[in-house]
Image (cartoon, rainbow, N blue to C red; front, side, top):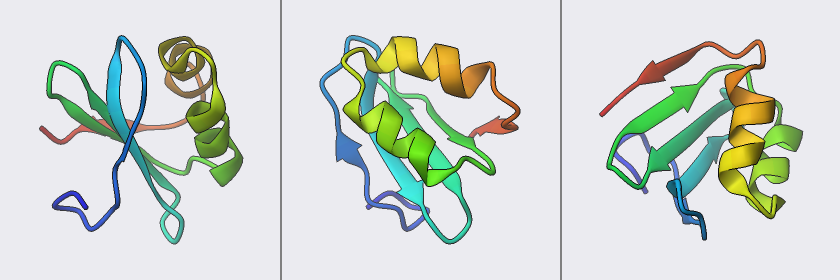
Length: 76
């Protein structure tokens, strides 16, 4: 678990280290390989599963999360 109480799942990616999802608050957490942690607000669980199952996590994140209507914040 991260300090925000969300379990982080390690992923195989050249860009991402781990992802986590807070179902109650619909917050997606993304830990990048360089150590920065971001949270994306109001993300549907289907997007989390899509990211988790994508063959290219970075491409999915860029195409579906970053350009989506989701506000984000850098936490670390």
